[in-house]
Length: 376
Picture 1 (cartoon, rainbow, N blue to C red):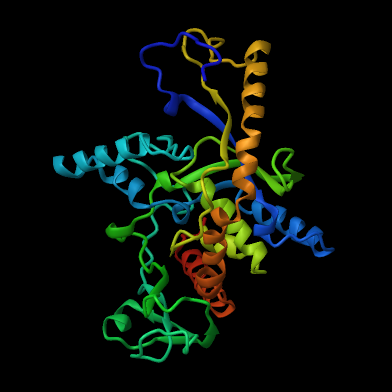
Picture 2: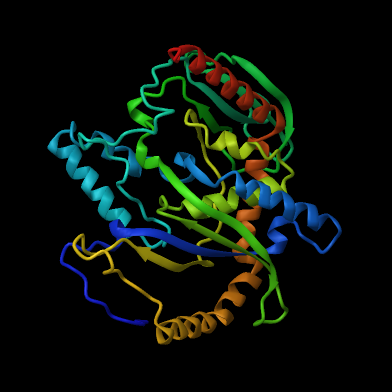
C-alpha cells in the first residue's frame, strides 16, 4: 500500500541513505517458557538483561551468513571474476525476501578499503584453531534411540586432522537428537588466526544497535483463544541478513534453557564461529525508517512521514494485520521446529563445559592481545 509520494534526486538510494530502521517482532510467550507462574517475572528480567548485551557496536558475524559480507573487503584486490561474484552476492542480498537484510558501507577508510574497528585492526596473533564436535553414541557406532548419550570433543586443527582428541570436555551429555542425526555434528570453532581468508572477519560484520528491548507481555486481541505474546522493539542504523531473527532467537534460547547470560558476549567474540538458532520471519515488521538529508545544499530537504494523514493511514494498515498476526502466533506447529531445535541441538551444543571452554579461550586471547599491544 502506498501512503505518500515524495520527490527525490536521481542519486537517491533508499538502502544507503537510510540512517535508522526500527523493527518490531512478536513471539508467543510459551516459546520462552512463560506459563503464568511466579518465575515469569525473573525470566522477563533476564530477557531484558540479555537483550541489553546486544546493544552498541558489536561484531554480529555469527548472526548472519558470513560469506555474504566477506568478499567486499577484498574486492579491490580480487580478480574480475571474484568481483563479479561479489556483485551477484550483493544483488542476492538486495532482492532477498526477508526484510532485515539491510547492510551499509560506512566502514570504509580513506583508501576505500573496509577497515576493522580500532580494537580489532592490525591483530596478528596466531594459534591453532579449536574445533568443537558433538559425537552421538559410541565411537564408530551408528546413532540410534538406544544410545542417547552424546560426547562432545574439543580438538585443535592439527589433532583433528589425525583424529586425536585434544580435550574431552564432557563424556556424557543427554541429547534429544533423533536417530536420523549425523554421527559427527560440528558445533563451533574458535579461530586461531584473525586473517584466515576462508572465514575472515571484516568491518561489514559490525553493526550499531541503538535499542533492543522487550516492550512487554501483551495478549492478541484477535483470534480465539487469545495468545500471550512478547513484543520486541529493535532499532539500528542497519542490519545484516537475518540478524534480527538470530538475535531474538539467541536471547530466547538463553532464557528458555537457563543458560548463563555471558553466552551472548561469547557469540560476539571476533574469533568465535558458531551456528545460532533463528526464529520464523513471518512476525517481523518494519515499523519506521529515517533518512539522511537528500541535498547537501539544502539540509532541510528530507523524506518525512509526519503528515497526520499519512500516519493515520499507516496506523489503519497496521491494525488490518492484527487478525493475520494472531493466526500466525496461535499456530503452534509454526513455532515447534524452532523450539525443538533449541531443545534437541543447541542446548546440547552449548552445554556448560562447552561454555566454560569458550570463556577460557576468550580470556586467554584477551591476555595475549593485551601483552602484544605496545605500551603507550
